[in-house]
Every structure is written in C-alpha cells, then in structure tokens.
Image 1: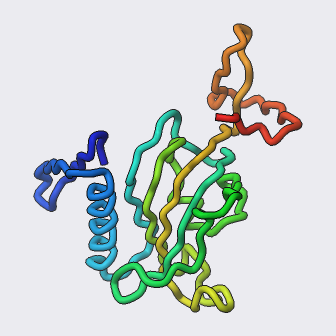
Image 2: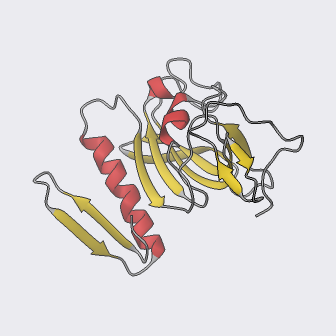
Amino acid sequence: VQPNNYSTFYDDQRQNWSIMFESEKAAVDFSKQVCIAKSNSSPALDSVLCQDLLLGEGQGVEGGDSLEVAYTGWLFQNNGLGQVFDSNVNKDKLLRLKLGSGKVIKGWEEGMLGMKKGGRRFLIIPPAWAYGAQGVAGRVPPDSTLVFEVEVRRVKLAKECSGSDGLSVSSRDSPAPSPVPSSDGFSSD
C-alpha cells in the first residue's frame, strides 16, 4: 500500500506491479481481498497474514510499546468475512494494550509489530494464534480463523526519555530502564 491510492506488489515470477485506485476505499478493499485470496490459496494457514491498509507515520511499534487501537473482528467463514464478533469502532473507548505482555491473542502480538501511529492493518489469524480449540463461549466457535482490521490511534514507545535539549529521544539502543511517568503517558495528539 502506497500513498495516493497506489498499491504495489510482486507476482510469483517476481514481476513488480503497480495499481492506482480511484479512491482510498477502493485501494483498501482491494488490499483486503488480496489478503483473503492469499489465505484461501494456502493449504494450511500456520502463521498470521498481515496486509497494511494505511501505513501511518513515525516509528514502527515493537514489543513493550503501549498502543491504543480501534478494531473490528470477524469470523473467517466460507472463504471470506463472516459475522462480526467484536468491535470497538463505534464506541467511546479504545483498546489499550502493551505489545508482548501476553494480554491479547498471540496473533495480535505478532500481527501488530511494525505498525505506526495512524496505520491500519488487516490480519487473518489461524486458530492456534487466536483462541484455539476452546474458542470463546457464545462468540467465537472452537478452531476459528479470525480476521481483524486494526488501527493504531496512539502509541507510547516503551523506552522514551527526554534529552538535555528537552526534545524526546528514543533510547531503544540503551540497556538502561527508563522511568515510568505517573500518568498513562499517552500524548494528547
């Protein structure tokens, strides 16, 4: 997915293709269909399929970073999007999570790595990376493949500190732990 409604991809012969769409919605819908087709063409889905819909800005998120996300989750049924089983898109509260903390399904932990603030991603998650054989009573049948569209609205990097010039600098390369502010630390933007 590229800016200005472009998508680029490689085919099986490693030939590069570029398509321009008439609208952002058309480009996003196409990208979702490519991801669904990829899932349907694989004999057994054994990892998370990720497809960026919007790239976002800033630094890609890593384990330990805190995020606030809007999401919708569908059951993958009849080779496509089935019933919505969960969403917070039209609700007041975003989902807060810390990547790598084990509080969300493994498919999210993997599938959201590298996302940027403002980015949207489409995830197709096999049962082993979701709720497995137990499912979720009344919502997710056992052994369900799940599809999520996630949008990162806010990001707080795990290791941020203030430099001597007062500007925020990333200290990811530094082994020293950074202090945790008393507030939740999310910037108001």
